[in-house]
Length: 246
Image (cartoon, rainbow, N blue to C red; front, side):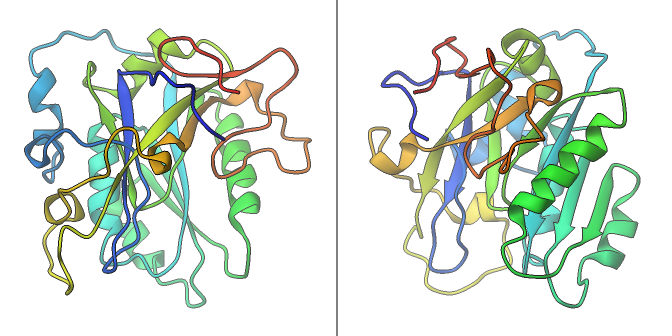
């Protein structure tokens, strides 16, 4: 799905496309705004803003395979943004993330799901899990190489409380390349890859979604695709400017 010509300017997803690690996400301003273990740097540009507590919770769903070197950074980053629950579907053959999930605590759940082409199944199951817990209102569907960037809010719940009353919020990618790196180093992904495609790159026009769970048509053949959901009639996917996606 492609975004309108004018992007919503309040939020981005950074995407890293690399010979070292494949990472499609939204946008990163500058590496010093992105990441530390507790998410402090990610909030540096908006420190001091007051935000009310949001009563409804936000879940994050993903499916991962062979992501052990990167998933810890990704989970810590998004927990710091205020995601209340992260459900990771482990697509490896040996349940490689099982012990890691136990060590991450109650806000992270790992679900074994080996096999081919399991993304749609994982997304649907994740949406159902969150719906059955009545306190969850929204869910994001990202990959482990995708990091959400908030420009005007400390926490994702505050963003959604303002901009996503119903339907889905489409969030543009900002894609990062190799930054000239040809070999692996143990530094965080958000510190290693700092050079991105221009804003008007066709690649950046792709989106990922955060969805109001009650508006997903889970009876559809494919209720949640990689870039957009199947919503009930009358519901739509918008950006933070209120523009409906084509």
